[in-house]
Length: 260
Image (cartoon, rainbow, N blue to C red):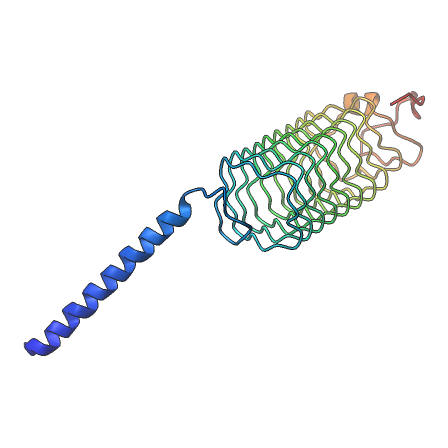
């Protein structure tokens, strides 16, 4: 049997531990509430806030929560936003050049003419996002998920998209010049007039993808999966295009030029 004095000390210690846990829980709950008046800081909550025309370049906002927020026309260049949750927010005309958004949640965002030049976007969730005319040039997008997103007329030149998912996405007139597209899934994607100039391909799944006037001149598609003769027939290739075994270049190649 423990001495009474020792037992009392144990009870006090347990009580103090429980009180500390309650205090931490309350503090966490307080931080979880949106605070639209707060400035940039790690873990802040700007959900449903309006934050526009701000200079946030280089700021540390790691883990920022800003769901369904109005975040248009801001400068987030070089900012630290790894793990941020911006689902459903409007980021149109904002700049994220060279920013770190590794693992961020950006599903269902609107980002017309947003800039992600040279940004770190590995493992980012872009599902159902509306990202028309966005500049992703030079960005790292390894393992990013663009399933059912719209990236029409966006620029992925020199971007690293290895292992990313663009299945069922709207990818019309997108530029992939010199991009790394190794292992990217384009299952049932709309690739009409997309340009694969000098892109690195390999192990891509094109099952059901729409290839109307898709620019594949010089592309090496020998390791492509799901590609059919019907898709090839409506695409635009050249004498340098390499096709999977069993597929042949149609007589319509090269395609006649057309106005954009």
